[in-house]
Length: 264
Ligand SMILES: NC(=O)c1ccc[n+]([C@@H]2O[C@H](COP(=O)([O-])OP(=O)(O)OC[C@H]3O[C@@H](n4cnc5c(N)ncnc54)[C@H](OP(=O)(O)O)[C@@H]3O)[C@@H](O)[C@H]2O)c1
Image 1: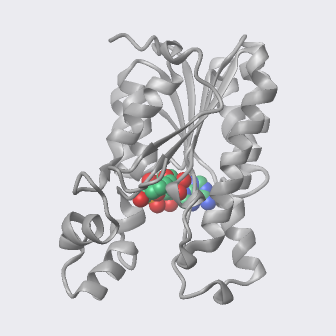
Image 2 (image 1 turned 60 degrees about the horizontal axis):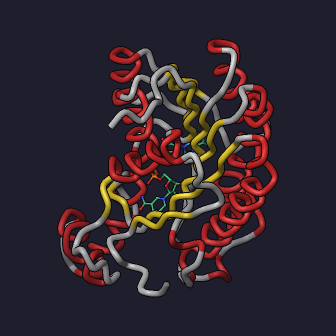
């Protein structure tokens, strides 16, 4: 299937590993010009720079200036932006809501919601000038689930879901489609990095982090397919939403969780 993404200018936030790196890889393989923003440039990103000419921009996207600089780099190089994927987001597990102070709420909101607000505000004039395009927000099933360990992250993702809907309404008449993807657990450093969620699940179950990802997490979270999602599966869905083939899809959220969420 030709997704008609060749030569499209695609900006991805949080791009050096995990879902972000999979997004960069997927869009680059389709022949898009990808501008990838993250604080570090990993070997994975370096390989995509060499193979596909991806432009990796080192930037702290939790700051007011970071998203502007990332979008500016795309416009400097290619003159426009066609697709923005707001992928950056972060959670820190803590015992209780009572353990999260104002500074932590602000940090999680800067990373998870305001990075998307700022990148969208910077990119939208260019999408509009180009006659349309697509924004894809990587949300989470946590936007709707009670999960006290990451109450700040969940609230930020709920905000991102609302932002998706509001932007879709305002800009659909001018050709910009805005959609969200809400993954359940995805095998990325978010889970597998030392001290991450996989270590915590492994310690609780008395097993290894690998076994926790492969068995404990799917079982304990009620994932009907019996496995977590892989990063490239999220990227494949984003490709479709970015494509003109999804031309009448806007303001929608697509869950990718192996059937974890049981309600309609
Ligand atoms: N993995 C899951 O189970 C899951 C489930 C639902 C939703 N999601 C969502 O999917 C998105 C990606 O998650 P992931 O699992 O791929 O995360 P990840 O493995 O933790 O990767 C996060 C990415 O964001 C970058 N990043 C972190 N802080 C940054 C900053 N201040 N400025 C710029 N870049 C920064 C990191 O690169 P640097 O460290 O180099 O900056 C890295 O490339 C997030 O929005 C997350 O909430 C993930």
